[in-house]
Length: 561
Image (tube, rainbow, N blue to C red):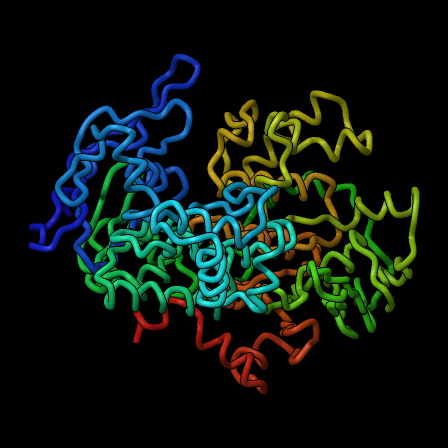
């Protein structure tokens, strides 16, 4: 399909014409966006989809002139309600940002001020742009928190960002973007950290606001299933160019470009099914890293958790302290060489449970056995050696990667910590691991800040594989990845599991992903297990209303009906 967009509707709010954006780093110029043209009508929802590095987030940042260091617009126009933002002065831009154009950034951990309370951060633009009084702005901030689905909004307004879950922080950013009733909302991966039920609620609200208030939405996402359900039009990007665009249902039902066809085929919400190991004639990439791992003589489950309890004290100014039971009498086991997935909404206790199982956090009571040994109270060198056998991939790769270290040093850090191999051998292992997670070895000398969110997540997975562990705890391991790379990583995990009898404890809010990898599923809500069984039992014959609600919320189902 031609890159030339279809004729603009009479109610066009945003029109991007022949946009070019370059980044200059170290004397080298990188052409990030190359001649992009599209439009967004008033009250319409347009989705920009594509893999990490395709330029979609660069476009979203350019629309409010917030490109990162080294970025500059080198050509084209960005007309917002008749004014070219590409050449507008900073004073005009300040009057537009937040008031007429709302923006939801990709990473909530780095977008909220850690020193300001949540309510104050929402109230600030209300005072600035809508001239509300301090009291009125504070009251409205609490209402906004309730509107985006945050429980006990009055108490949460008095908390700091680190006291909220990743999904709750993302909802705060969404509330801030809508706070001043803007004409356009630019949402850069707005639901990547949200569980499916809240994701559906937030997207429902975006659609409703677009219709009721004639608000336009530019949805930037790697989740093609979300775009399929929610967008009127889809713009598909690859390597800085638009390769296809048109009415959403038409593009998804009959994609004409081979790249779009690959995205549609890989989207878990659209084509989700259990992945099987690939039949290979040689070794799986990365296999030498597991070559020396001993085989356990034990026959039972590799991990057994029994009656785990974990509580936290909640303190709100002016109110007595209360106790939150994050994990309440949770029991489950992980069979050897299998994948057990824990699924539930933000705040359900699934991540806390996984941290206890990996001995990163301690339970108030209950026991954890690994390979037949009680590891509940391990300390010192025995606990350190356990780290070789249980590795963790965290939800937020940016927060778990040292920004000062090169990618090679990050990946080989576990090898150095356990004095495995010499410098040359460790460097070779880093290259093998980069290839293992579908990254170019040429990235070895870069820093995390020079990689996309999806690339950083793959580096985190590579680091977890470095020691050849027996079990990996995967906390939302593909939430930051575009769909085609997501499928590659999930397939890689399945292949490695089949060859080396790896066991996975997989944490996710994405049931489309869960369906692709799980042998058994544990459903959690409010810190308790409400349903558990084989993947087939839970997915095909759920016994609880909550489980049925989760399944009904999987994105992409509207597009295939």
